Image 1 (cartoon, rainbow, N blue to C red):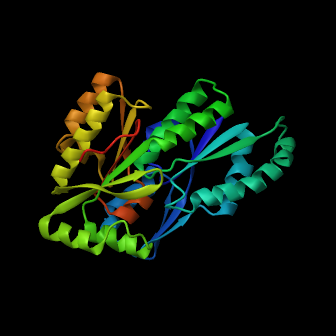
Image 2 (cartoon, rainbow, N blue to C red):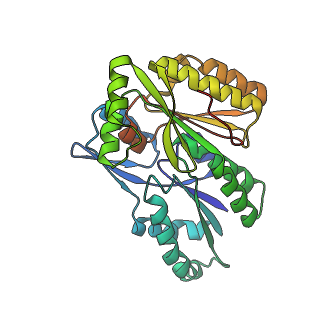
Length: 312
């Protein structure tokens, strides 16, 4: 069994390599330049170095098309695995989930001939899972899938568990630039961040803490200043860690140099809470797609827990 994710799911490169996870890429076009967002460091570092996340609200993103998903599977994955779970960011925010579901019909129709020609016996199975979250918020589902595959669990049990975890994933985002975020939201007809919020944020340095839960995104708190917002978010996550998580991981992604995380207020406390409770603190670079949509320097955080109030 194997895993495939879309590039907007934020997990670390080391985790991808350790578990042999395939990435369905997203094409990003900025200022006449094209980037392949596949979570590999090369294009990601080139994007960050040119600071395109600070001025790219006119950028265009193109999720992996149906034909490319089919090619990835029929050229590679159906020959390497007997069952693949495809995990995507929430279908309410991206068409990638619909693309993968559409591609699955042709894949399941044509895989037999491909496997027979390669001398690979037996059937092939694929399951598409909507993580119902974005960016770092998708990480707990991916981590749980990897754990269950490594444990040799049956595909039906894995699917049932992943659907449950997806229903209990909380993804949080702290943006640096509300005007940038609003410009991108307006371009995508997304009214999660209003003009009034952007104006107040600029005038008073008020930052919203945004949450994605079960596919719905909106503000759950506001703080004065980015550092105070980071401290509030990390303190909240530390409390959730101590109260118990459904999957023993907290993923934090950052739109830039990951070394910045250790400089943010509250991060040391989150690291300490994770160490105390045997929870992995995964640090991941935000995808190019993520930075295009929310701006460089943003923080996202994902965890899975029983339903609760945010408490900001």
